Amino acid sequence: MAQINSYLTFNGNCREAMTFYKECLGGELVLQTIGESPMADKMPPQMKKSILHSTLTRGDLVLMGSDMVDENGLVKGNSVSLMLNCGSEKEIKSCYKNLSKGGTATHPLENTFWGALFGDLVDRFGNHWLLHYQLPG
Image 1 (cartoon, rainbow, N blue to C red):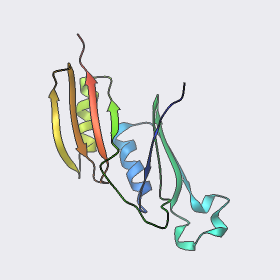
Image 2 (image 1 turned 120 degrees about the vertical axis):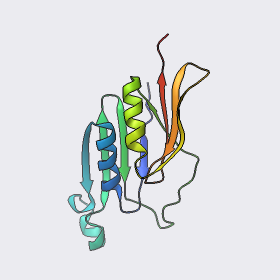
Image 3 (image 1 turned 90 degrees about the horizontal axis):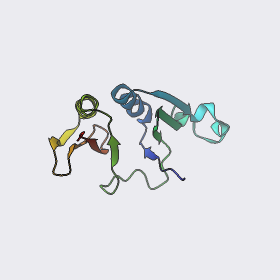
Image 4 (image 1 turned 180 degrees about the vertical axis):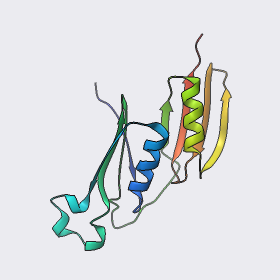
């Protein structure tokens, strides 16, 4: 079956953001700079430290990112959110606390009518996260 992964675009701070997400969520982070790629000689020198591609993986969680922005620049909107399905109450509380550092806790974690613990936030990089834990029972 096909799988969809989140791919985030940043404006020069992909390394910082992906490192932050690794600290919050755990997992293995792989970063490739433009300078390490075959396209290094075709890019301006100031872009050599920019991230061409990054992947954070932890089990089934895959989060990717890049500093590669087209000529129109980075345009952020509210049409995409990152849905994080957690495996325990402890995990959702920890992730919510960590991801909201420097950001905005827009909807604190609360028990919902559908039997879950749910909340959302905007992290310090402007990305919207939905956090969900289906309560047992």
